[in-house]
Amino acid sequence: MKWLITLCLMSQFYLATAVMAAPCVSATFDRPLPGATDVVSFVTDVPSVQFPAFWQQGHIGEFSYKIFSNAEGVLRPTGPAQDWSIEISCDGPTQACDLGPEGAPTEDALRIASILGQCLIHADIDKTDFMPPAEPAPVSTPEDVADVIDVQATPNPAPKLSCGLFIINEATDEAVMQRLLVMAGSDPGPVDGFLGPRTFRAMDNFVVDSGWATSVDEVIILLDKLLCEHAE
Image (cartoon, rainbow, N blue to C red):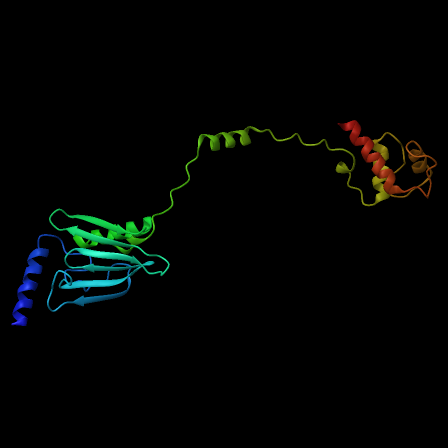
């Protein structure tokens, strides 16, 4: 007798599900929900309103779900810190689902619950449907465009004039000083890096009592500054 009641109820279930497409987990709910983990499928010997013939439970992302062959389901959080649920109720003939949130579910939870409802009324569900939507590309505002235009329109500063040490390529400091003396209009003799009377006389035009004690580096700095001031 029990077997006969079960057979009759099962036949009523198949007649009811014939009016709508099979769920994405198959008519017997033995196919795992796409993208779900820890999936377990159940078959009830004596179906009832509380326990339909077939149902499935598992985890999808950070949520736990249960879906039933009477086109109903529930989504809950897995974390103990959250206290909410979303009841799912779908209608086969109209192919529409209602969501009944309790507590404060997140927007992502409502999105997942809506996809579970789609699974219950048709089979076109893929695991990618449960993935978070891609972030939209940032849209440039008129202010952003103006900033770009301003940056592009700003002229580059004029390069400094080449002068003094920037255009000298001598091997020693002494030769560098002699080259600067030439550029300043003095005659130090050959630019050979050797200091002689002519070099000292040329240095006298810029320093007092030049001689072997005179700092070559200081003369170079003095001449470089002088030449570049006249070049500006």
